[in-house]
Length: 343
Image 1: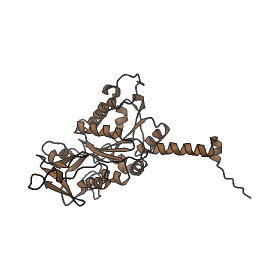
Image 2: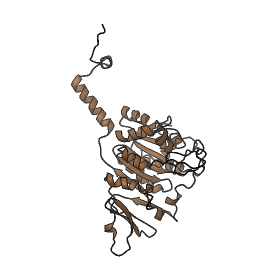
Image 3: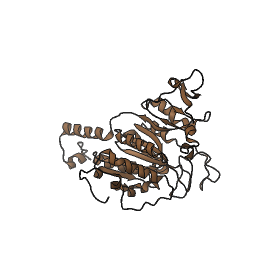
Image 4: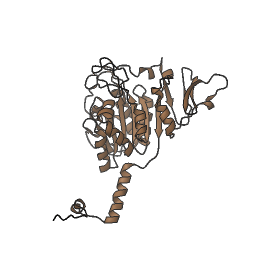
């Protein structure tokens, strides 16, 4: 970080641009993510010196060098653990984790699920390009089954992780998905993540032009996106299609694609997205896993709930312990109250 700049003046995107050269490959989706974060952060109303970025290892994790904030490019898969420590030490900080699909869901998989359930007030952006790029193109935990890479020359035989479903199962309190080639949508999702009091998980589809080029283009190119992507918004019906003629309704708990221009159907018959309904969030999360029906891929806030954050519970526990036992010196705390006499 070049300097501490809490002068009271209004921040602008340039305040978050450091004097470092950005060294990602030309065309990498990381550029768009960096740009959207630098665009949104001045609007968050937080002093610049209160932002902290913690990253693991991978192309995405160079992000900390490219934000003029405090930060740490840490070790593989452990960004969540380090960020949790930073937040516990100073709850006033706005702490953000940057990670990739390999870093967060393979090497850091254990840290990921426990970070989700603990619910620190920390935001986690996972750049998912479905490949290991920094190490030259091995398959990752989110690579599709059958993926041919240097380490799977005959195709991956593993079922991939579904990050949204994984986060739901780990009791995350804010879960959303966006993509690098839709800047406005990404900005809106980042703002929502910031506004959420608690742990926020944002999966960002990110193109790797070298080792997995075009993996997500069906969801962003004008020729295909209206059929392949569906934007979900709280209180709005699930509508998609070239002429927005298609929708999704529920038959019990089974999602069904319907044509709303057919006789007897209307918008009111469709599934209205409720981002607080976990049962329905699980159904949405599994759209991409369906083998019977080809559903569009959902983007937006899938699920959110309010729950007490970890650092508040911890602080309350410490205060209650002080009331009960008084303010003890450290050596007394470490020695404990029980004494054993060895005879």
